Each structure stands twice: as structure tokens, then as C-alpha cells.
Image (tube, rainbow, N blue to C red; front, side):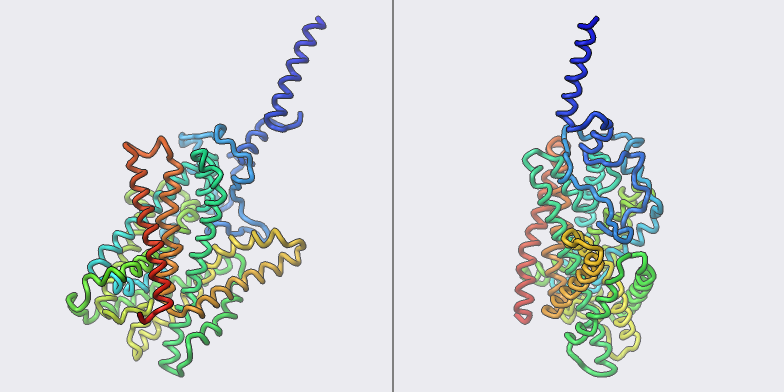
Length: 511
């Protein structure tokens, strides 16, 4: 009998040592906790966070606490152990527990708000650099490509969510997880890809903030010049600095919701009045160029890709939906919203260039409206106020990327409290300094679009799809691979050539 007890005891010791070696656990650690930690899934699906997803990536939901994001780099992610669930009952994407999910209509409104900004007012300048015919078909083509890339990003992120059993991922997190769970030679670049996406997000959003600064100053300059006195645009930038800093000391988006709603009403009213002016006394199409010149096309590319500026909010919007399955599809929220956006851009660009011709070069159609009309001056004032109030929405993304990197170096609560206000003030001052250095609104828009928007909208989404589907799910004869490569080449060419020509245009504006 003693030999039987000895064998059973030895077997149990061997099993315990094997588990301790594999999982580095002690005797009291539950196995389900070990598996969850190994995959970086610290919370089981039944305990998914039942709060509303942040509208903007990395947005802080509570004072002093940051949103929960997946950190694949810091976890022991074992590719061989990643569970893949294709059934809808176990699909984390379709089983999000959200406290206040958005309806399809609400998502549509947010989508339109995220895509319609200063870019739409610059479309006549884009058509001037392309020509009436090229601008018309080119804008529709750019809208289709950008919308397709948004679909690519959403679909790839859904697949990645199922791999790691997460209900949602942000843009940079999707890039990180795609590389971490992709081909083995690429796994070491996962953190680099996440950092690159965050850098381009910061550059893009800070670029938008610079454009907003210049736009508000230029429109205020024209209104005050017409009724009171003339003063340099730079002085308007200086006067805007302090109010802009105070506005961006607001830490939570919910506190600026009334201001955002008011800005949306002003923007809609302004666009209606703009079309009222554009559609009067239109000249013949023969009075403008059907095609401008090859040397101006890169400037058109930069402005057009800047206008389709909503790639950064696509995932947060979809993550918040009550019915995320309604976001895609031929008649889904994304396609419906982007068709409206593309038609608006094309209409403003087409009629704006046809109406004003070569004068449409100031980066905003509001600067072309009649100086003597009170209605026209009211449009400039309305759009200036709307863009001023929208600045903080664009500012949230770079702030919530930069601040965590600074916060970890601060020790006391007092340092963290004052450090956040200092960081916010410094970032606003940075956008002010860049706006004062380059007051050419059209050139700034083209540069931001070509350099950063093209990377986010045309390069990273197809790259993420290729890495996610590689090598067995790229379609018959790898047609998805060649399609994505073609989009990336188009984006890279626009990135290089557009950035180069935009910089030359800034350095030599009269050339």
C-alpha cells in the first residue's frame, strides 16, 4: 500500500512543478486567472466594462483616471493560445456592455460633425489647384477611397477584437495588436507601429488646431477691418491665445457639449448662407479651367485629403453604437454619412471655384464673400465662433496621447494637478506659434493633409488589413493584397509629393 501512496505523491509533485514552470504560479493561483493574464485579458467577458466607450481615443472618463486600453506590449501575449470565436453568441464586438450606447441617428450626426470642418470651406481652393472637371471627379474618387479605408479599418479591428476577446480597440491599439498577432517577423514592430500612429494622430490633430487658429483670426480680421479698423492677423492670433488656453483647461468633453451643439448650429446656418451666395449669378463653366496643371495637383491632393478628416473618430464612433452591425454595409451609417459628406465637399468646391475662379486661393470661401453685405459678414463671424468652440474637440486627441507620457514622471498629486494645466497651455501655445509662423491658411491645410492625414487615411488602414489577414485570408489569388498595396502606393506618393510641394508653397508663396 505504501508504494501506491508514493507513486501518487510523486505524480502530483511532477504536475505541480510543470504548472509552476509554465505559468510561474503558486499553489493558490486559479487557472482561469493565469490564462486571462497570459493573454492580456485581465477581465473575463462576463465582466466587460459597462461604461460608455470614450468618444475620442484615450479620453479620460473620470477625474484622475484614464480609460482602460489594451497594452499588448506589456503582457505575455502568446499567439498560439489566442482564442478565436466566430460565433455571434461569443462575439465580443456584438456583446459590448455600454451604459449609454448611441443610436444610428446619433452616430450619423457625430460622423457628419467629425468630417465637416474647415476642410469643406477650403474646397474651392482645392478645385482651383485641380481644375473644375478634375476636381469634381477627383473629390468623388477621394471620398470613395477614404470611405473604403474606413471600412478596412473597422473590419480589421473587429477581427482583431475577436482574436484577443476585447469588445473594442482604438486606432493605434488595432495597429499594435495586428502586428503582435501577425506574422512572426513583424511582431517585434508592434510597439513601433502603435507609436507611429499616435505620432501621426498628434500631428494631424495639432495641425487641425493650427488651421483653426488661423481661420478664426483671418475671419475676425476681415469683419473688424470692414467696420472698424485694420490690424495685422498676427495680433488677432495673440488676442485669441489667452481665451483659447482657458477654453482648453476644460478636462471633460461633457462640459463643452452645449458649446459643441451651438457650434454645430452655427456651422449649418453658415453653410446654408454660403450656398445662397454661391448659387447666384453663376458664370459659364468655360470661364474656369477644366484642368489646372500637373504642378498644382499635389496641392489639390493635400487639401482634399485634409477635408476627409474623420478617420480618427471612426473607431470611437463605431465602438459606441448600440447596433455596431449597422455601421457597415452598403446602406449603413458609414456609407450614408460619407455620401453626404462627399456630395457637400464636391458641391462647395465646384460652385465655389466656378463662382470665384482664381480668386479662390485664401483657404476659406468665407473670405471671398462680399465685404459690404451684413449677411456675408455674419457668416464669417458665425463660422469663426463655431471653429473657435470646436478647437477643444480637436485638442482632446493629442492631449490624451501626450499627457500620460508626462504624467508618469510626476510624483505628487500637486505636481499632477498643475502639470496637466501646464501641459494643456504649452500645447495650445505650440499651435499658436505655428499658426503665427505660417499664416497662409491654404498652405497649412495642404501640408497637414498631405503629411499626416494621408498617412492615417490611406497608408495605415490597408497596412493593418494586410498584416491582419496574412497569409491565408487575402482572397482569391491575393486580390486584397494587391488592392491594399495600390492604395498604400497612392497614399505614399501623395504623402511625399504633396508634402514637398506644400512646403515649397509655404516657403515661396508667390512663386
